[in-house]
Image 1 (cartoon, rainbow, N blue to C red):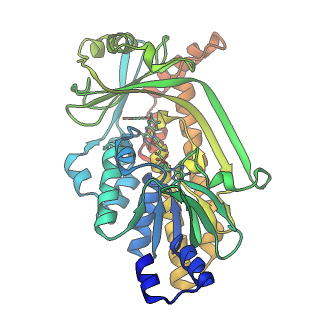
Image 2: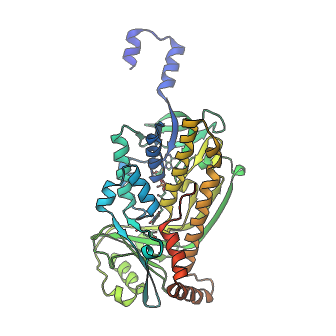
Image 3: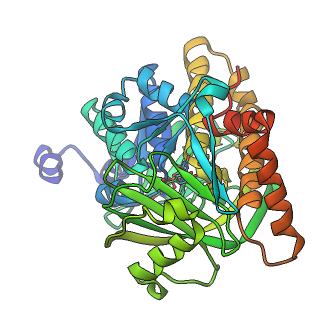
Length: 415
Ligand code: FAD
Ligand code: DHB
């Protein structure tokens, strides 16, 4: 570049400075921060409608593709992925589940989601979904810039918001019409807005989840959520040969405190005997601890900056809702941006926050309720008895099971 510029001898000093400045400035219609499920899916939805976007991601591609997170896709998420032509591997390798079980007092009760709602969920790891979204986006010529941490969003109240980021140690900026903050709970987008412009709602739970991933066949063909006096446990899976298990742990616990054997022993103790006997154990592929919180920011729009996914809300993982909420957010956002560019309508952008938050709060409520029902709380003696009473009620009432199933398979996307 430099040689070309100087060989042509066309630039005096001010022009050269401007030229350099332009090298550090990109422009697009929608600047997306974060290449998690929210950012990646948004770029697909926008591309489908002919809207240009650029994704800036702090981490490397390998790091993003290796993060072990969610495993359950709601019916609405699955349908949307298929509609976008992104469901081929999911349909081949994912596992459709029509029910799940709740274990307590040594028994196991199945919730037949399909019978109760006509819907099911798909077991397909977030890592696999992320790889599919990245591959398809890059194959279609989409722009994802990895190892580009965003420092701040500036001028988001104006028609030319700027995303300030770093690339190879250089400060750069992305100028756009709109910014989508899809950068998770710890991201830069929400932090670019003054605290007094938003209301935060937060509940931190007094425990975490210790998770193990291992190449062993799952203990059951469907998921088991277990409530036990020693604490909650979840038996999940990624395939017929790879299992994902979790046990409730204390907040100050550390992965280094746990051997594989100690994990398997603790899990076995929290399962009904019929399951504990069948548990196949093996060496960990991964072990990690996740804290649990409920968190919502209101509103989800600040001028031309829109928040989506974990950047705007966190739910405890018990209801498997986090990834699915990220999907409904970007569905609403893409629809609103399409109406703006296609029909010069801004009413859907104006309603984005309200519409997204309505669905968010329902998922926050369900995840809170399911968390409170299944975990051990040390604060009072009555809580475990109340939990057992409620679990027995759910097990005996089709109406109660229908409420659970409707929420678990995912509530409808609003019009
Ligand atoms: P993220 O996936 O967090 O992506 C944000 C991206 O932004 C990241 O790639 C990050 O590197 C990037 N970023 C952050 N800061 C910056 C910056 N400054 N500049 C540039 N990039 C930045 N959900 C479900 O629906 N079902 C489940 O079964 C489920 N199970 C879970 C189990 C566990 C143990 C955990 C921890 C979570 C689970 N979740 C589940 C939640 C789900 O993983 C998240 O809700 C989901 O990842 C949210 O997607 P996102 O794109 O909003 O955010
Ligand atoms: C998984 C995580 C969840 O939070 C959940 O409710 C179900 C499954 C999982 O990681 O497989």
